[in-house]
Image (cartoon, rainbow, N blue to C red; front, top):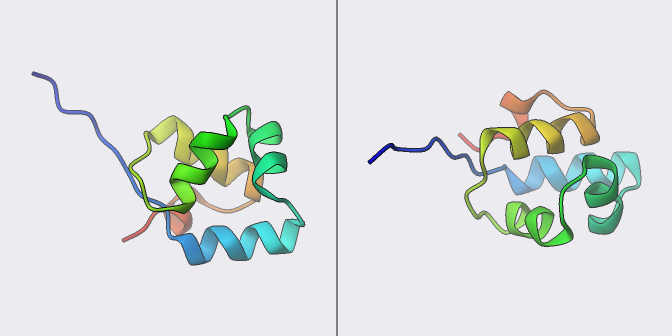
Length: 70
């Protein structure tokens, strides 16, 4: 079985960037091409895949490494 790489986002960084951009969950979803459910899951600390992390980071104008929880 192939292991898949997943990440969690740092919710504080994500909320801070959302506040700076003025984006709510729906706007982040619309601009990133992700579903609102996926954005909400990321905010609640659920695992996300690398393309999702990249889409969120690009939408929020932050380096994916800063958005990923350590």
